[in-house]
Length: 422
Length: 90
Image 1 (cartoon, rainbow over the protein chains, first blue to last red):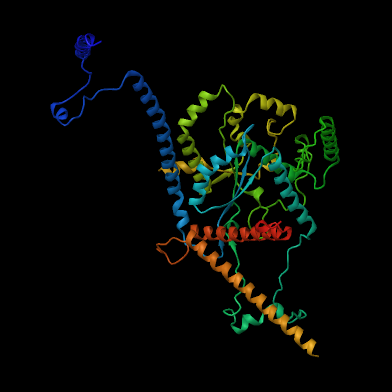
Image 2 (image 1 turned 90 degrees about the horizontal axis):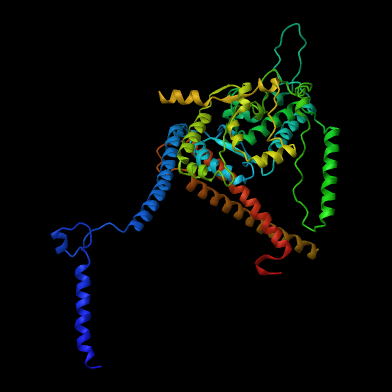
């Protein structure tokens, strides 16, 4: 034992020395000054690490750049409309109000469309101090039936009340030959008008909505091709359809109910009852449009307005935003590409939202029925097939009647942009 | 006569108290509302003497939201109180 150790040790030391000597100096770059400061040789990491860091940095940088650009673009469009919101505003005025219909993309959740709206459209609307009201749906047909029901309610109310204009008491002009008509004093003036009590009994504040100033006001914005289709069919159903539920709809609904019951019995499941009523069926079919009479209760010779003088929502101009949404395994590369270039979508949305805010319109033409129609190319094929089987209104061609189309208007977004760029 | 005289006096005092409490509640709510909406909507630089359109719209929404929330919370509290499940009482 004691003999072997002294001979082994130098040998081991010698081998260690040779290995350190034979190991080539690390590649890289150095400088005497740096070496004096104790900074080791600067060198590139190994090949694998290089690949890892490059991939990581390019993906992360791509995401960060896109997000940053989105913010800049949003800020750019917000800035463009901001002067509109810095107008001094008296309390009795009400700003312009948009009606917004949002439908989920096919086979996806409402969240997808809402996200786009919240990120790129809402900031612009808010910056320009526009008011808006959102109607959303989670099932097909909700928007259509809601729009139709709104128009039907209006027609119902119109048919119930006498259409004669309210006659205001007119101060009689006394002329010699006409018999004098006596008007009660309280009709002519109230005590507070005479006594100067307006400070003590302030009269009611008369609200003045901005929309009531002209025939082209407000606006309807549909997010998604489906929402637009439903809105247009809803308009037709409300304006051309009957006021009472027709027999064929009642029959169909009864049938559907029976089928549902049978299904429930067959499956024999004790699930909780469906808390949502089924979506009401359309009360008129596209084939019947031509024969139907155009809302006889309404005075359609001029723009139909509410009691405040605001044009009814179906008289307001329309705009449609396309919701690009891809579904499925094979679309993943395109999805990734779109994720990294979302700033283009943000720019597009911002420009269009600004156009809506600027409120320039043109008449609706037949071609406008294809608004955002290229969205349909991306709809999943399987979904379209089942939709056709179930007679879904989303997958059918949009039928329209000339009487309604001639009344509609569209926001002229493009012309507005060209003028703003000058 | 004594019984008749005593009873209404108590109730009128109770009524007064109730009315006072109600007034307190309403003023409290109003003050909170004004505070909240002022903080949220009115820009603190006071560049202009009048309210701008943005501020006007914000105020409209703020007040509407406040009242709506108030009603909702009140209704829910009432429901809780009626069912007796409030504060862990069952």
